[in-house]
Image 1: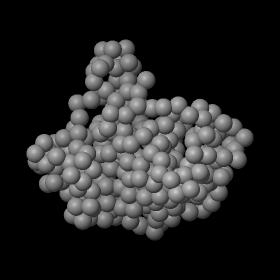
Image 2 (image 1 turned 180 degrees about the vertical axis):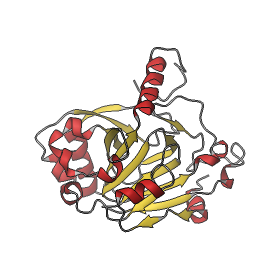
Image 3 (image 1 turned 90 degrees about the horizontal axis):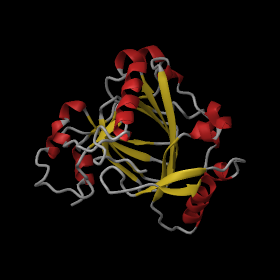
Length: 273
């Protein structure tokens, strides 16, 4: 059964502010609790200029990996495409009102397109992190990333379209039914709220959820280890900044190394290669 609407109805809104300085962000919110800063990215060049036609007109074109469906809870694997072929597919789907399920996730966008690096400004976040991993998410309406958490602190900016987040605190870890599968830099839940089986997860509905819909220009902070479900409500472009300390990044890379060498959960993972 699909319990998405039930979860939303029972959830509370994420706290939001119209503006926030770096010092206050550090003191009250950074890696403590979620906060939405409405319009923080409104004046970014990315928010003003980026859309599907903008990407289609870039000089560079490189191969990318696409996903389909809910990668976190579905048995899903990457498939290859060129960046511009995917963007053209999105444009055609919008023009012809067709449904597509492919989406581009965790694209190392400034490695692919270095000229765009100054189009975003995460300084309020980067003032308090040592290492930052910035990635882009581009896809059609309806794409889903099921419940999971991340080792890094996340600053998520919505550039085009709208996205919905449902969030839960780490104190509900057991009631989120963590998956035993290895996933690089995070952990997945076994619960799929779009295909929910109450007998398997009897305590899940005891979790106190938060929810928010991000509009273009909004920025959401999700602290490390907080569970979140993400769904696109429109064709959307998002940029996410994962922030780490040097020790956190070392731990992630060390664990991934021993996993890929076959010493840690070698056949029980979400790896797609």
